[in-house]
Length: 249
Image (cartoon, rainbow, N blue to C red; front, side, top):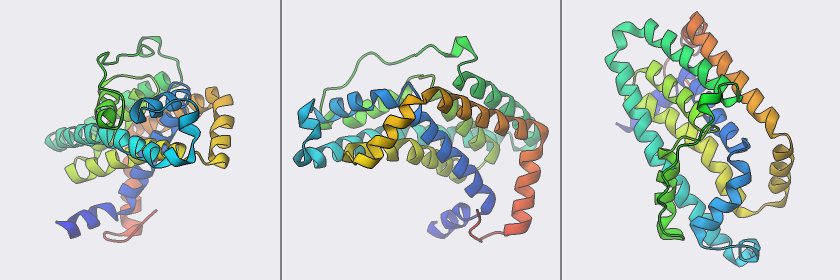
């Protein structure tokens, strides 16, 4: 089983899709409806506030809280990715149709992420929240994953679409994990309070509008590639060039 997963993970085409998924997660974190709220999330999952969050002695608790929060949404996102990959596998005989429909939806998600689809800018959240502190951190992560946030829903939808196109449960799970790494790793870095990174986050926040525009444009490009068939052609070229079982790009 371990070797099979290693073979799945080491193919060049899949690694390219995983890179797209991780980038989608990172763009979601840097978006204007996530990055400004990060201190609030960390305060909630640690039970700390204000000066307590800036204390070096509290850093372990901050890291634990953010890690549990990330674990909570990772479980939900990976489970959803597996479901979509399974659906794609069932529809394997209609692969081209799946690619076209998925590509169209990803383009819609890209336009939504850029703020050009008003109907998808509304937030849908579970209002009942778990208790404040470490014990409630994974539950808050799950609640976060089960809602619709304009800066997360479109990028996650694109990754789920790629999972469906891959049509493999293992590949779908890997793409979902890559997305969660892109979204979750910055939470962990933020909890460490590294000054250089905090400065970078502050600079990005000042240009958040460009984050959504660039992220939306990238999603639209991926969608166009799927609809036109260029995605499949490029993947086939990679398979022929890289070869199975070889670590690719």
